[in-house]
Structure formats: structure tokens, C-alpha cells
Length: 323
View 1 (cartoon, rainbow, N blue to C red):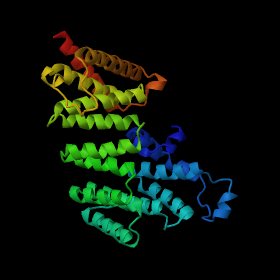
View 2 (view 1 turned 120 degrees about the horizontal axis):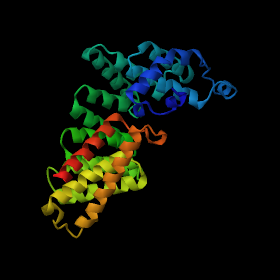
View 3 (view 1 turned 30 degrees about the vertical axis):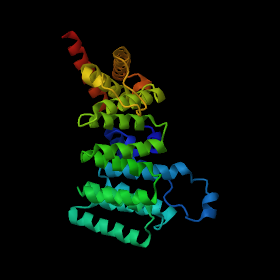
View 4 (view 1 turned 90 degrees about the horizontal axis):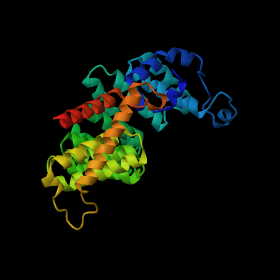
């Protein structure tokens, strides 16, 4: 396992990779500096300190929490505390996260939540703690409180794309599609060239189209998926969403032929164009799954669930074509 994995966000790592990193934790900790002075002057002249070192410690801590290696997680946190101090906002959030992960019951989680409230009373603009509080409320099933917490956070920090994305997910979980679309559009404003964000907005619009305003939402979903694969030629979710959207439009002539208002920015393409887009999506999904399953080096960044979903979609398409 390459140590370079520890320089990527742990949320992007598969469970298997996180497990392997966690098993390597004792060796990594043994061969890394255990204590570095918090003095800025001394750290400048310290040859052993690099930015990558602290990224490794933080990501290793998170990987260990995912695999319940609490002992190694505490060691990682201790080294970060020694370097940056207990008053560092990011350190405070990591300490809270460790308490959340090791809490034995809901009563212990309530105590962690109380600690977050106390910290925010002293410093209402502590963004890392505000995010942890919102995340904990969501994990505890207190959805409405989590929405309020994120709304307050965004009043304070309206350019926080991560908070907008979390809010979109909460709205989506409640079936509040219009609100979810709005929140996801805010993410897109902040990250206009993020292909995954375009695809995510397309997915939300595709779900929303099942409830109301189908022509408008499907047209917008198609636009978002097309933009996603324009920005990233091998993005599986973009092609997956594109195929789902084109299939729905091709199978529902009444929706495809609906008149959009003159104020709409983008109309639904003709059936011939939709068919071409469907063919492009089908061919690309087939290529991605084939080359991934063949073990080709540059085609291994997809999760097993994504590959399985793509294969199932292709098989259903083939079955429909045969019929």
C-alpha cells in the first residue's frame, strides 16, 4: 500500500484501503516524528517537519477511526495536539470527532454535543466545531436541528461549499427537492468546474422530475450530465446519469414534446439527438466497466458499487433492445 494514499482525503478511500492503512498505523507512527515543538521558529529549522507529515497524521487518524483502531487514533491526535495546541480550531474538531467515534451510547453523544455548544458560546465563528455539531445532529437523527445548524453556519460563512452540499443532502433525504436543488446550485456557483457537482445536481433533478415539473427538470438534468462528462471524459456517474435521463425522455414522448416557457434557458433536444447521447453514454459505460474489470492501470478509480450499477444498467438496456 502506497503511503501516498494518506495524502488524499480518507472519505475518498475504499473501506479496504482504509483498513490496510489502519493496519499500518503502528509502523507509520513508529517511523515518524513523535514530538515536534509548537514554536514557529523551531519548526522553521526542523528538517523533519513537512506539511505532508501533518496531513498523514490527520488522515491516518480518520482511517483508524473508520476501522475502530482507537489506540492509534489517539496517538495520531496526540502528535497533532503537541504541534498545534489544544486551542487550534481544527484540532478541537478532531478531538470532538474522536469523542463521537468512541462514545458508547446516545448519552455520551449528548455530552459531546453539549461541549460543542459551550465552545460555540465562547466563539460562535468556530467553523470546524459548527460543522461537527451539524454532523453529529444529523448522525443522531435530529434532522431539523441539523438543517437549522447548517443554515446558521451558512449565514456566517455563505461561501462554504461543503456546508451547502451537506444541506442539499439533508433536504434530499426529506424529499424537499426544490430546496435540495437550490442548495446544490449554491455548491455549483462556488465550484463551477467540478464535474462531480454537476452530476450530483443532475441526479437530484432526475429524482425531482418524478414528483413534478418533469420537462423542465429533465432538461436541466440532461444539461448537467452533459457538462459533467465534458469536464471529465471518464466520469462514470456522469455517463450513468446521462443514460438514465435520455432513456426516460426517449420512453416518454409526452414529456419530450412538452413546451417549455420562453424563459427557460435550455429546451429538450430532438429524439435523434437524444438517441446519439444515449449511444455515447452506453459505449462509454461499456468501456469503463470492461477496462476496469480487466484491471487496466488507469481505470481503477471507481467503486465496486459504481461498476456494478453500470453493468446492471447496460444489461437492462441490452435486454430491452433484444425484446
